[in-house]
Image (cartoon, rainbow, N blue to C red):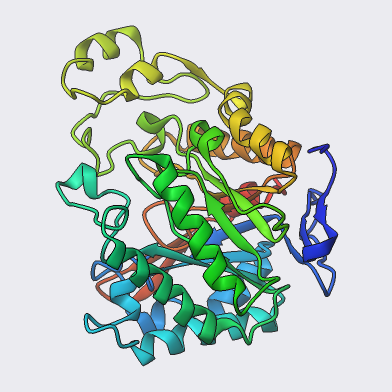
Length: 378
């Protein structure tokens, strides 16, 4: 497959479009066609008291997203935000989700519904002293399938060219075959009712490109998309992130080129046992580096004849602004070179293009320059 061309799968009506730099891609009526999007984080997932659900994401936000040139959104949802502990659906939450999809249909914005966190699995549990039981407990696996049965029951009324699903965010199984098995059964559950729904599937271990060789997906299903995430170089993209093991690191970082100086490396290399970010920080980063990082995922997509997509990437605003914007320019240029559709993390959040005051529940800044770079018009 030539990744410098528009990727298309006629049988499942799915296209990844390589947009011109002048304007948003005009989608054809019967294809799930996407290029540049944003994640609607902290609304139905990882809320943490951050957002007032009724005002945080509204039809006006969809209108703004459309006006900025984005053609899709990814909506992460968490089990605890959508279902009570007894398994009954939270009707208000499902109402917000379906209303959001309806707003998007009005503005021709595609939607990826991403099952982000469930009670038996959280992608950062291992880093935060928690425990995942999804891959070891058959009852939890059956429960996972039942969640998708309910989601499919609710969302199947929406057109397949406008709404897609992501099976699970950032799987982390000790054995990648455990994830592959879950993928096979999960896809089969959805296929019972929706044989042509687009389903996004990531690799084991946080969907990083390096683990794609171990990924297996159901054969002869052309309605699948391979989904990777990338936050390299982590010392730069997550600089001063308070949820990381290196949150107290405050020496200078830089991009493009070498992320940290040799002096900074020597000073910090033994402070964070098991963390490889400082080793990686001695390397030079730029577009060529991203091409190398993405190579295993690109090769897997080519082998399977399926499109490749990046569902998360981004850098926090605590680094120098000119360095941050260059990071976005470079990674977006590589996505476009290889016709990889992508969704930035995030819309309103710490990484966001739109500011939000959680005390007053009001919007603050709008970073139009960043939005233009992410879309690919600047």
